[in-house]
Image 1 (cartoon, rainbow, N blue to C red):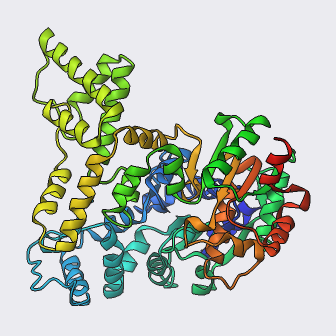
Image 2: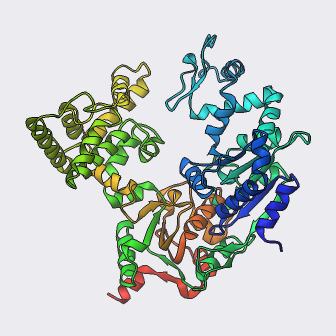
Image 3: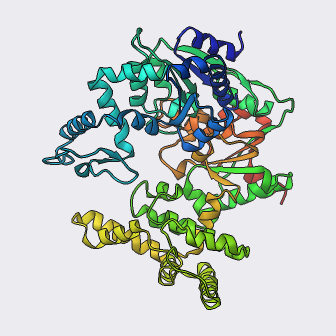
Length: 558
């Protein structure tokens, strides 16, 4: 079989759209970058002379930055998220945007429709907060819908985009929304006379988000040239053996010489005890803190073990996805917490220069207009900061924030002010009560939990959620699974081979993602009851000699 690069290059040379199916650890990003490098080398002069660029769409800004760095920020390639790219295409067509936004509004459910929406002479703008269509402001979720309307209504737009962008690469295609795939294939890759080459790179087994197209892409468009990568450059042979049994349709070959290990344990002990005992056993075998990762099913498991569960409970009062916003530091308190912890870090490390720069350039402009030019003022500031550091250890979030605001150590985020107003005056009683309950709960949380959350977000602990692990790799990985933790998953069905269970595919994908993070050694710990059939399945995956009842082993060596 031809090398993967040659297959991709053949598609590029023959204007053939394609999909690269790359198993975990196979070097998918390397293949994508290799293809970009080929185009830069062969067609840079041609494309740039015609005012053309290659588009590389990524799922996150972090991924975009990684690809940019690998191609030395070459101007031939425009690397961005799908939202960023689509908005850059449509934002110049303001008249058409107003027409489409009106159409979107008219098709809304009656209870969501804005009566008498008037966009006359309003500039349509994309901003980071919630939608305010009355003012012409759209949010993150609107960009793709509005783009779909634009491409469907104005066919010339497709021709303009194809003329400017002859090649599109999509990284992590499996998590790309079906609407986006439709825009690319139906509008940009369909017209023979003006067609862009669309290249998808990813792995449907690593689909995490329900909104992604995943495996359905193969049913959506059967004309895509299918290319598979079978090499695995990350994992040792024992780990790959498990991966191949989880996914027999894309078998991988190990490129590492060492065997490594892959083991399965199960326990009926309570979660905390079982995890602690498992970690102690692995530590006795030489697993250190610096070379391991513990992957857990939900953030709740991590929050409990890391000591910020009250903070998580408080955020659950606000809404289903509120904790996700906090984790991204994209909620009302996120930037304030991050700023305060940065202050504490530079203060405790006696970096005065960094401290004053941080105060002067804080995200809300704290201290910008206050001149600290006398010894007394510096002494006063130093005393306030020292007290703030102390309060963080033994007072509530409300106590710490009130002190910081009162002493002008940080200015109050306008989003917090707005939330407080909503908790008092929101017309919708349900929302008013929810916001009020959320604020009261956050205010009462010990601030110490914010410190612990910050350590987790800064990856100062060996713990992570399984969702957050995609794309990462570690020498030693402990995967903790528990069917009682979340009804979205049923790992028992994976081990029993019961693909009729609605959670089966989702659970299989997540287990595959987690197991494939291990570069050398893998341990899976199951905390739910194992049926005989499930035990047989675990033995088929890992080998009978590598499936162990943790409880019995602990008793044996006690």
